[in-house]
Length: 350
Ligand SMILES: Nc1ncnc2c1ncn2[C@@H]1O[C@H](COP(=O)(O)OP(=O)(O)OP(=O)(O)O)[C@@H](O)[C@H]1O
Ligand SMILES: [Mg+2]
Image 1 (cartoon, helix red, strand yellow):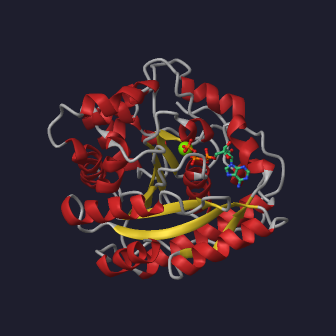
Image 2 (cartoon, rainbow, N blue to C red; image 1 turned 135 degrees about the vertical axis):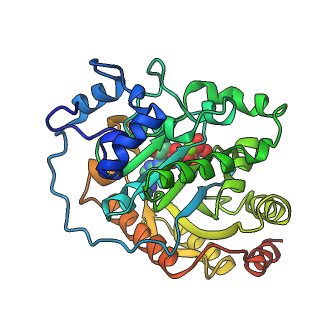
């Protein structure tokens, strides 16, 4: 039973219509994901964070639904460029705009899970590791984000750190996440529930098997680029990896948007880097630029996105703008191969 003021569990959510909820609970045993009569780790999170936000959220325009459900891998093998912040805050802004969003945390560091209010050390918590290495359905791992309706996360538990090694001996190892996402869609469809409008996958800072799984599962790649020295370092390699995945494992993968992050308007360097990236990728770079602001870095320690932590701040506004662009692009196009664009980007970088 949901306590007053708490967000619902998956089987209680508005994402899941009532009839389907009952059927889903009966057929999948999903009700077993919460301890009977007890307070789950998730409930504790709700109690801890419930009612915290006091600042006013500005009026938010509803966002258009994508032409078809979209899976976006947020990837850049360079560390600390804002992948996790982007996955979390973009997802929160999309959900705030009325869309259903699932974040899949593919990074063993688990920062996206924490930022979305999941205690990833909770005993018995299922996560992406159990999906990749243990054949658990993705649906069984999905947890609601306490702060925003229709925002969900498949968390990274600490076991995910070993997944890259374990996957090496598993058949079809590059397709594990893709199969899990397809299974999720079938399971939801069977219960007359639409798939999430967006699935955002937070990738680790490497081009190993976890990132490969994300790229094989994705329709497009979103690349955050930090407005700092060596911003374009490693991008050639990332674009080539995308091209290799397109050629062999996932022909439908496209190079999607590039998002400039940690932009410090007081420095000439940031402006120069932004200009350089826009010159290399004129069509891909989003108009929205994410400023460097302490609120974005503080929010995760409160188990929140910046969208709820500081709803009217510059960080939240910038991620809302980026979400508006991502949603508009996805509403206007269907996923498909973009060999020409990727080839042009590769040529432009070499
Ligand atoms: N716009 C921003 N302003 C200020 N700090 C930011 C901003 N974006 C991210 N940060 C901070 O920079 C650090 C790196 O960001 P983040 O974790 O999002 O990068 P990442 O690419 O996911 O890192 P990793 O490669 O380790 O996964 C974090 O401490 C984060 O809070
Ligand atoms: Mg990260």
